[in-house]
Structure formats: C-alpha cells, structure tokens
Image 1 (tube, helix red, strand yellow):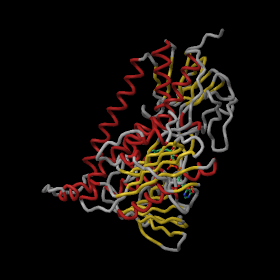
Image 2 (image 1 turned 90 degrees about the vertical axis):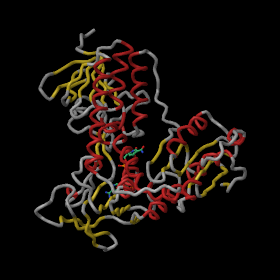
Image 3 (image 1 turned 90 degrees about the horizontal axis):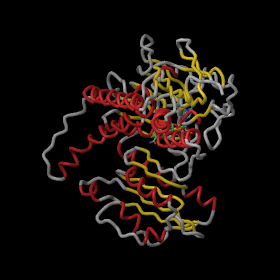
Image 4 (image 1 turned 135 degrees about the vertical axis):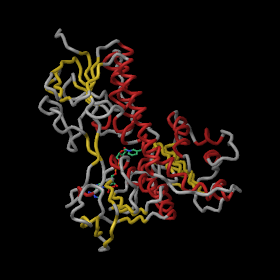
Length: 460
Ligand code: NDP
C-alpha cells in the first residue's frame, strides 16, 4: 500500500470540514491535515449564521423601549451605535475562530493556513507549491454569494460585506426574496435603516409554506419595509462616478419604471459552490451544472478517494447538515460503518421578524402527494397584543388523512426557531395528529396552540 503523508486531507475549515477533521483525528487516530485559505469557522461562524444571529438580537432591541413602556417601564431608547456593536461582534468572531483552531490542534489535526487544490486522487498542492499526499481527500470548501449579471453589479454589497460596514447606510435596497434577503431586510430595518426590497417573483421565500410566506411578507410591510414583489433592477449607476466602490450610493431604476437613490444596494441573489480552480474536474471529480460537486448518498465523488460535504455539494445548504455529512463521512470511511446522510425532515428557521420555523412538507407539496387535513390558527400573541401591537402569529399542521401523521409543521412567531427544533423531534419520530392532541398544553404560551387545534381548517 502506498505510504501517504496523511490518512485524510480536508480542504476547507468551515463547519463540515472542521467536524470531519477533528472526529477522524480525535476518535479514530487518523493522521489528518486541513487547509483553510481564509478564517477557521467558515461561512457559518465568520460571515453567516453566527454574526447574522447576533445582528438579529441587536435589531430586536429597537422595539423594546416602546414595548417596555407599555409594560410600565420608564425607558428611553437612545439609538443604535453600529461601531460599538461591530467591535463587540468582531471580538466574538475572533474568539470563536480561536476555539475552532484550538479544537483542531487539540484533536491532533495539522493545519495549513493557505489555499489547497487537488492534483489527483491522492495529492493536494498548497499555495506555497508544496504537495502532500493523502489516502482520502475531503472537499469542504463551502459556497459564496453571487451578484446578478447586471451592468454595475459590482456597486452592490453581498452578505459577507454587511458585517464589516464602516457605517450603516441610511437607506438600502435589498435584491432577492430568499433567506438572506428577508433576514437582512428585517435586521437592517430593526437597526434603523430605511429598507426597500425587490423580489422578482410574486411572493418572497419561495419553497416555504404559502400561508407562512404571506404572513411574513405582510408583517414585514406592516413594520415599514418597502417590499416590492414582481420587481427587479433594470439599471443601476453610481450616484458619484468618483465613488464606485461596492456599497457606495447608487441610483436604481426598477422594472416598474420608478427611479430612486439608495445609500447602498445589497444583492442577496443566491450562492454558488466554491469549486473554481480547485482542480477537481482534472482529477476526475464530476461537477454539476451549478459547479457543485456531485456526490452519492455517502458523500463520495466520482473519484473513490475524494469525498465532498457541505455547501460545495449544494444538497441542503445548512450548517447542521454539513456537520451531519462530516460525521457520516467519518463513520463510513474511518469507522467501517457505511452511513448515508439522512436529508429527510430537516427542521429549519428563517430569522425574519417574526421568525419562521418549519419542518416537513408545505401544505401545497403535501396536497400534491396525498389527501390531507390542514389545522391552522392565527392570533395576536399576548405579550405584544398587551403592548398594543397588531402582529399576528401562525401555527399550522399538515396532516395525512390516511396515516394521521404530521407531514408538515409551520410556525410564524417570535422564537419560532426554538419551537420548531422541538416540534421537529415529534415529526421526525412520525407523530400523528392524535399524538399532538393527547399532549397537554403548556399554558399560557403561544406554542400551546399546536396541541389544541381540534378541527381541521380545511381538507385537500
Ligand atoms: P436563495 O437561493 O434562497 O435566494 C436567492 C434569491 O435571489 C431568490 O429569491 C431568487 O429568486 C433571487 N434571485 C436569484 N437570482 C436573481 C437575479 N438575477 N435577479 C434577481 N433576483 C434573483 O439564496 P440565499 O442567498 O438567500 O441563501 C442561500 C442559502 O443559504 C439558502 O438556500 C439556505 O440554504 C442558506 N441560508 C440559511 C439560513 C437559515 O437557515 N436561516 C440563512 C441564510 C442562508 P427566485 O426565488 O425567483 O429564484
């Protein structure tokens, strides 16, 4: 057998790559190397989930003085200090990056702070020119945001840029209707930025439950976000031709014919897998039409010694899924226990205000599949209703008529992400509507409604 430098070489130090590297090294004694060209922690820790969620928290305080006053407190809101927040944010990201580095070191993983590319089935080349051999190579290089094909698109920001802004713009145009567009629309609005959002389709959050999408869109508009559906940019130009850097003020003409000036534009128009120039195709790895690495159920590519996990495979682009894929890879390759990745019934949340928590099929997809009953309620929750706010929450169960199993659960409410994690366990276990019914309500809560809906709202 050939003598390799490593048993495993991981390219990419994000959630999936770090997990696979440290478990392979720490639990199986494998000799593991890992290369990361940017910062350890990847998209989730450095420019995604973590800083985004901290910004969600920051933005939620905007409403609090007014709500607190309704509850009898004498509180004045003195405005938001972006730089004070940003300093703390970056300190936290530095801390987390340190944790990731230490975890790798403590597990015995050798790290290379540089770019690595694939030479062949068992060889990687570092940017320094050094080549290293490995019995297995794991590609975990993630993805990156893309700007649309549009003249002057370089003037727009992408989500990576938001966490490093020198100042918050007074006004921003956000383009897109997916997770990132909707989350940043709510975050920036909450921080005091005048937000306009263009989405080219008829309703934001395509792929999610229609009723949930409708309520979130309505809540965003009620909060003051100028959400325009069926709208896109026709033309964008720098307001000042001498300042044409990304994030500089722009003049935008929309498909509606309307022209408006914005301090900045943010493109949240999707992400693309990081496979450019990695040498994968030359090594025999197959890429899909979007540049994603094509893998089987075990994350194995067309080259048997090369595997790929996480966003670079464009399966379900969520951190916990990349981590699962990394664990399944180690189980399969280093523990002799072939483990396919289970991508069914993944709970997830969109951190809009209010949040969306979801697991399973939408009403629309379930109705295509089989006869269903829908149990749905929408109401003003006690905490905000007391303060005089009109915002509504939504609780919805999609039930199979034949098996009574819950096919989908959709919650639009404050903390819906926390709720759906727990509902997700029941749904994953195959709970029926009757299992929900015989669970006693926790009173008074918002989520008790999920076990007290007695009569179907409709059948399909
Ligand atoms: P999405 O693919 O979800 O959304 C992209 C949006 O941009 C869509 O609304 C799309 O419209 C629109 N769009 C695409 N191209 C253009 C164009 N040329 N002009 C105008 N609009 C365009 O990507 P995101 O970047 O929002 O998120 C990427 C992934 O990251 C998500 O799918 C998710 O897996 C993950 N993520 C998860 C989060 C969470 O769990 N909370 C948070 C953030 C990201 P259309 O619908 O018509 O295609």
